[in-house]
Length: 92
Image 1 (cartoon, rainbow, N blue to C red):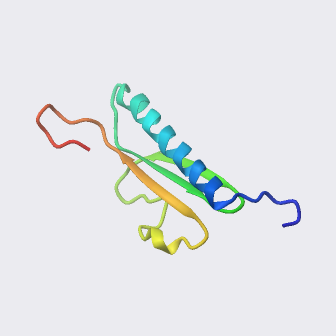
Image 2: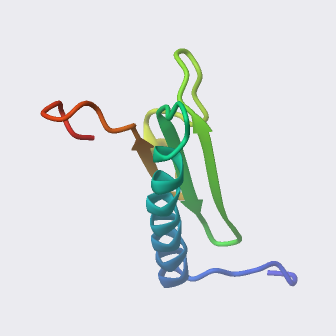
Image 3: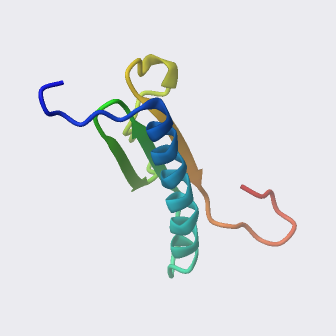
């Protein structure tokens, strides 16, 4: 591929797993903020690269298409991290 990186499917899976692990670590950092809010992590990998993006979830703002099946070349995981609610409330 003319010197471009080539990431195998197994390599892409490994990168996605690393992204998921990083998101779980990020959850711990967000939880100790003075005013923790919901955060969305978007991890994607394809034959040439992988990305990890995250942002605070805000109404009306999206950083990816809702239909993940529409991403034909990328393997993608979207992880929403929500702050813990009061004891006895729903868990996220």
